[in-house]
Amino acid sequence: MSEPYVHLPILVSLVFLSYYLCSSRPVNFLGGSPLNRLSWLRASSPFINALIDSPSTRWLAFQDGKPLIALRGTDPRLALLTTADVEPFLGSKPYVGQGHQEGRIPAVDLPILDAARFRGAPIVFLGVSEPKGNDYCPTTLPEELASVLVGTPFFSIDVTEASQTKLDHLVQTSTAGTDGYKLSFAEARAATRGLNGFDAGVFAEARSMVDWNFRNKVRRSWRYFLILLSVVPSVLCLLRFTSLLRLGGMETNMYQSSVVVQ
Image (cartoon, rainbow, N blue to C red):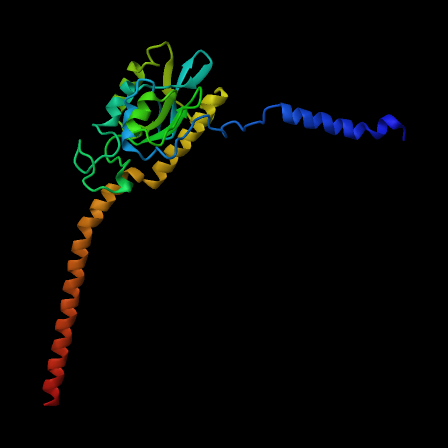
């Protein structure tokens, strides 16, 4: 073998290695979320409530798992709603960290109730799209951090249980709907065909969260707990009554046995 052909495999390997190092690594479509999820702040009710009130916050609405899509011509995109658009579905404040009574915070200081939500449509904090990194100082109060946060917070909201009248009003009066776009809830697989990488990543995260909450019935756990509390005393009373009947039967049998022996 001549000298040039001996070094050909090495040259080919170097070319592929340089291409791999210099090019950006591929991210699967629908597989990479562009949002910072801020996992250590998701359970902070002051932080989440402050973000919801922020004018820069955007919402993705779902009905039976179908995303709300804005269509102009043949160019589909996610319909990004403002908090004012979805406010009729949110219920009364506080939006998270709700107590048993409407408008109140939990009476018991439990970590599991920090981000509790028992009324209104189910919502999920998806994360923040950051043009540049924020300075997350651990000593800064959550509500103060939310006020100086640079970026766009994203939430999802599941309006499956909302009336058709409220849904029609949302489609007709929302900011996206009055900006020349036609809004509709579209089947997810067909809706994502024309989305860009950013919208596809945000949609995939939001759809998975909405689906998980729907399957696990998280928002109804408090209702089930109250039902359980009302049922348990009745069951205990029934068991007590049954045990008394058994004791009465045993005493009757013992009395009859003593009579026979005498």
